Length: 478
Image (tube, rainbow, N blue to C red; front, top):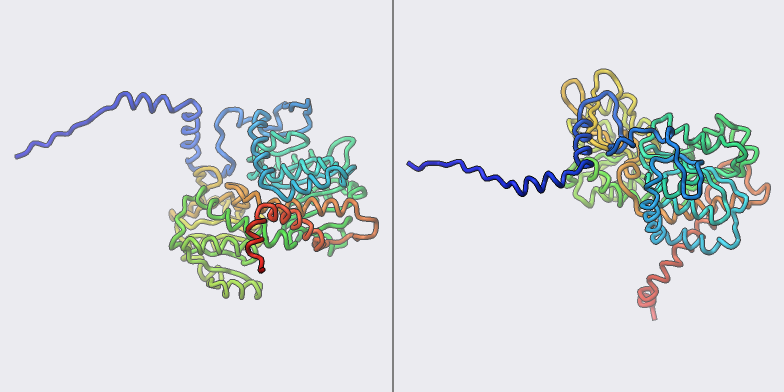
């Protein structure tokens, strides 16, 4: 009979080496990660803190930038160097916007413009922010999404910027108010993404509209709110609808979402796409981009759509049309892409199978009825940044990403090159409204003039021609 020996080998050098690698920061992160995996009644969708300073609200901090300015509120001014490098990288890719900056900087078409903005605070919007200032404008900025702010970019700007990642709802409105409610400065232009800045001014400071020349709105949610004001006869100034422009729909909405949805899902939920069944709600440009990316990865995609034209497009593109209620029991993922509200409600989520992933790629954070999940019988378990498990009494759980807010901007990145086109369109719309003679635009919502869209593409194509001159020449007929 053979004797079996149990041999245990120890590697003291490797153990000590591993222990030395686990720095104080690493230990703190590990401890924080474990503690945040515990069950709680409320999610904290922001990024996990790594040092005690993160527990201090920026509203309670006294900060000063390199110019001696204190009129801002951000997470950490020490991140400015890192943020500046990110902005410089974005400038290299945002060719159209930089071309506009170079072409118009001598004319200063926005001289005397006082622009108050509420958009995402990222490296890309920082290039827009600084371009507007180069063109002569004064700007004050807040974030339109509590999770999308890049703190290092906000630190690099640190001039009349009020935003940080992980704001509370109270912080969100406080930041917007700080942009508007300032002594000796009144805005005369509004750049909005979602309509929150317009809503706040209308609600709290309606007298400011006497000096406002116009509003430029980027998102479908903001456009709905503007049309609502217009129909009620309460829209006091002209507004330009950038969202429905060809440059925004055919490039930003389509290609940004097509290239960012997979990365966002991988980073948050570690999802394998092949063979998964996915319900995509809405087949506009955002839905088209998301569906194409998922189909290319081997997912079985169902489309829910109420618009007959978009529904027929989905059918002709090879997707399966369905009602959400008919497929919600079997799908592995539900992705909303409509910009509307209450697309996925509690009744749908009660029927979802265990482990179903629910997220939003549309503009509005009301597409998924998250409030209906904050009830005593359901338990919220925060797993990591932007990932929450919602647990039913029978043990079933669904995976909610970014608390129903825009997924790609909350947890991932978007293609800078495509955003350059949208940012250029926004800048041209601001220039148009600010310099328009009196009477050209009435108190209504206007689709972006086609000439402005063409101008944006001219700036983009001028760079493409320089880059692809040889290829273009070869393709031309003799």
